[in-house]
Every structure is written in structure tokens, then in C-alpha cells.
Length: 262
Length: 353
Ligand SMILES: Nc1ncnc2c1ncn2[C@@H]1O[C@H](COP(=O)(O)OP(=O)(O)OP(=O)(O)O)[C@@H](O)[C@H]1O
Ligand SMILES: [Mg+2]
Picture 1 (cartoon, rainbow over the protein chains, first blue to last red):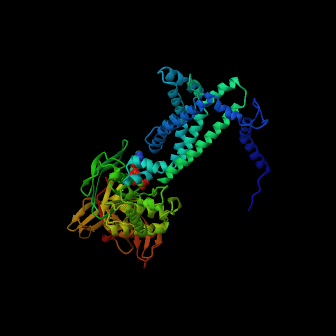
Picture 2: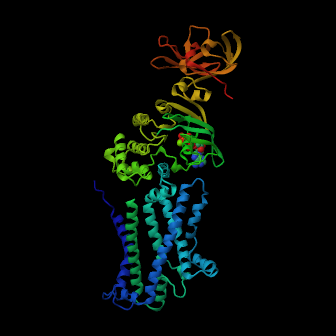
């Protein structure tokens, strides 16, 4: 009963694989190069460009800032986005149809425009501190993803389950946490990861929101490459990847386990 | 533990659409009452009102003398069984059943004991650790039943609990539900659109139509003596013949149907005969005879064999009617005969508005 696979299909799969993994290999390779300029394949192997990141104070600072902003904006987006997605799915009949579109609208606006308008209308107008502007900007950036992903996992949720819990004596708010959330766990995890990655890699919004003393890692990287052509770009990219994967693993673990423990 | 449920003059809306109108229902302690009616007549809405998921526009609901109308749903202490089971997908069978006990703050070991006993009763002890996703429809419905029963609620409500099961299982389960309900003596409301199901397990049945109760009575009365034309049609009265009294002579009334058909009916058999009424019956309420002159003249159509009688499709001046004839005397299509009302199988209804 083994089915033969067409050679062209295998070829295509290999191509896609190379296409996906190729850039990663190049970046990791370049980051490990012992040269003082960006090159691939690496010439000599060394970790000096990773050490270099931590020797430059601006990189140390921006790594911390980027992580803080990513966690904060993702957290806020979840706190707003989960109830929003819940309401839109639960009361779908009663709510106007355009409401769910509204939450996804920011995706359609070019991020540069979003960043610029935020700068003009929030940061400058109300003299909001840079750090807070960054958090607001990133929250707006990731919120549509959160709402979309949570909505998708709520779409096949049977809300009569919630009513069953309430009829058995569980108050509505408690029911939300003990019945609803555990059942959209994978959606929450996916939303978290997607939002986190979007935030930590963002350039177009952050570039308007950074200023004296505060910057994010990608923006600092941009500034660095304007002056130096050394493999730091590659090593920072690898670091970003490692951080992201680490966060994904931790989220998967902790969120997964707390929900399972219920 | 069991309590009386009273629904008084409830009116309910979804938005601006009126869904229930001035509905009243009184269910005695330990009684099982079914709500029976076509899709969209407001059965689920009635349950949701009692459960507290929907607030009535006006009217009151009391359970055991306690006013429920403004009480939040989670404080009403009502056992609900849903059509789609509504089991908690992330909890094991045992945790599903124990959920209500947990909300009541019952200690873990007591809880485990009661859950165990309940699972035993519904025959699911061996599946205690399974997740609902890995159960068959019938098993899911048993878990749902156990989950509602284990909290020993004063009121149980079922919303088409068996409609997702196959025919054989449906019959087994309805007997099981009735036995459990009887054993606990729990007051129950049972929603279904299956007449046989409603009649077979209920003490009384409420036949609903467009947000109103058309008749609330025992299955026997509903089946034999429907109170109005709607219920008559609902329980399978095929012949509804509008009549007008044209003359009275003591006990005998001469009545006329459409097409000038005249009959004499005796109030000795039918009770008081109003001036205008509907003579309603199933096929066995009209006897086909070619040996009498009194009756509704008919041209016989298709004949079908019922085992206990022949049934004829009949064309009469009063319209298309269904009548039964004796086995000993089969008549052929095209023959003419008289249809004679059989008083015991007929009932007199008020004319439709
Ligand atoms: N959430 C809602 N919003 C608006 N109208 C509704 C809503 N739920 C039900 N209705 C309407 O209320 C009426 C009664 O609905 P209900 O669900 O009580 O019917 P039912 O008797 O349970 O029918 P079924 O046998 O199909 O379950 C229907 O006309 C339905 O369209
Ligand atoms: Mg219904």
C-alpha cells in the first residue's frame, strides 16, 4: 500500500526547505565568522561577535528594553484582545458585523503610517514618555493578531458548555477562567507567540517612538549597521532568534501546564 | 428535595421580536411535563427563562415558593441536560460529573464517592477517566445526565436530550431518563419535538405553538380529546369537518357541513352540540358503509390495508376525508359509500377563528 511520490514533488519540497532554512544557515554562519566584516561562508570560527553585542552598552540596554516592551505589549494585547474576541464570538448575533473587521483594521494600515500618526497624535501631542508610547504603539501593532487568533479558536467553541457550568453553580466570571480559557489554551499560546515575535522584531513603529536614551534592539541594530559592517548584525539576529525560541518554549510550558493543572 | 415550578404569565422577547406570549405553566412536585411543538415555537426559550439565561419581559417564575425571576442563573440550582450534551471538553468524565459538587464546596473525598455512585447508576464507572471527546453519543448523554442529577437539583430540565441519538438508543435512553427521574422524584421539564417521546414518558404534555401553550394535559386526554383544532391536527386527527346546526329535535341535532351534507347527531353520544363546531376524528372515527343511507356521501379512492381495518382516501362534498372500513367487505376505488361518524372516536371542537 505504499504510494509512490512524484519526483517533482520531492524536488519542490526540497526547494521550499532550502528557501526556508537557507537564510537561517547564512545568518548563523556569518555570525560565527572570525572576520571583521560580514561574510559567508564564515572564515574561521569565533564567538567574538556575540561577545561584542554585550560589550556595547547600547545593545545591552536595548535587549532589555525590547524584551520588556514585547512582554508588556503582548500582555496588554491579550488582556484586551481575549475579552474582545470572546464578546464578538459569544454575542455574534447581537453585535454588528463590522465590529470584528474594526479590530483587524490596523493590519491594513502601513505600519510606518501607524507609527508616524502615533508619534504626532500621541507622543508629541500629549507629551507621553517615549517608553509608554512604545508600549502603546506595540500593543496596537499586535492587538489585531491576538484578536484574530483567539477568535479563530473560539469559532468552534460551543458556548452552551459555558451555560452548563453556570447552571451547575459556577459564577460567569469564574466560568470564563475555568471553562472558557482552558478550552482556547492553544489559541492563547499561539496569540502570545505571534504577538511577541511581531513586537520584538518591529522596526517601522519603533523607529518613530525611540528617542534619547530609549531604543529597541532592531532600531539599535539599524543604527549600528549605518556605521559598522561587522558581523554584529548577524549575531544580533541569531540572538533575537534564540530569545524568541526561548520565550516560545517557556510560554508553551508554563501556559500549557497551568491550564492543565486546573 | 423536589419542588413545584410555577411559571406565571411570562412574556419574552428577543430584541423586539416577541417569542413567548403570556405563558403560564404549573408543574407539581415530582411531575414530568414535556413541552412539545414544532421548531421555533419557543420551547428552548422557555427553558432558558427558567434557567436564568434570559430575562422575561413580564411575568414571574417561582420554584418551591421561591421567586427565581431576578435570581442569577448560577444561583438557581437547576439541573440542565442539553441537546448537544455540552460536556466540558477539557475535563474527564469524573470531573465533568463532579463539577457541580465542586462549585458547592463539597470536600474532595465526599465528591469522589458521590461521583462514583452516580457513574455507577448510569453505567459509566469504567469510563471515569476518559475525556468527553472519546465517548459515543449515548455515553456523552449519560455523562450529561449524571452531571445534572448528581447535584440533586429540585428541578431538572432537558432540551431535546435524545435528538442526536439513533432510534433504538433513543427509546432505551428515554426509559432510563424516566426511571432515574421517578427514582429521585425530581420535578422535570422535558423539551422535545417528538410526539411519541413526549407522550411515552410524561405525566403531562404542553403542546406549544408560536409562543403559547395550546393545551396542557395528560397524554391520554391529548390523544383522545384534543381541546382545539390545532392540537387535534397535531395529535393526528385527519378529519376536521366544520358543521352548523340547522335543526334540533330533542336529543337529536341535524347538522350541515360544507357542500350541503346533512347528518343527524345525538347529544346523547356527543354531549352538548353548539350551533357551530368542528367534528374531528382520526380515520377510525368515520366508518365506511355501503349499506346505510345516513352519513357523508363519498367516492372512495385508494384503499390501504391496516391489519385491523381497510383505510380509504375519500372524496366528499365536505372535502377530502380519511375513513376506515371493515375487513370483511373490501370496496374498490371508484365505489360510492357513506361515511358514518363513530361517536366514541369523534370529538367536538370550537370552530377556528
Ligand atoms: N438568540 C436569539 N435571537 C433572536 N431570536 C431568537 C434567538 N433564539 C431564538 N430565537 C427565535 O425565537 C423563537 C423561539 O426559539 P426557540 O429556540 O425557543 O425555539 P424551539 O421551540 O426551541 O425550537 P427548536 O425545536 O428548533 O429547538 C424562534 O422563532 C427563534 O427564531
Ligand atoms: Mg430548541
